Length: 145
Image (cartoon, rainbow, N blue to C red; front, side):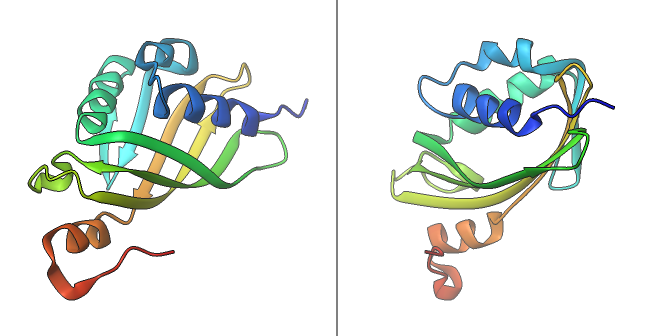
């Protein structure tokens, strides 16, 4: 089996879709038509539903940037794991008032990648509870360094 560089594909996706100028339409070339993102245990099914989810998420964080911290793949490139940090201003994320205070969200994404490099599935988890606590003043939770 030929080894592919799926890390490069995921990094290109992060750069293109999740960083300025936020090319959401590029999702068409990165993900399968029947793409699934499992986010917080909930499946968002289809490329179009994913695009709508991305637009809704991006509308809640101004000047959003996604920085990859660490990314690696299995031997054949069919799975990629990526840790990331997302920063920006609060524009109502997690149902909080849009006061534009800075946010810093950390997360992990595990990707399934087809032989042709198309992204098939993304399992994502993030520190939403800690971000919510910080934005609402609960539990005095500071953002991690």
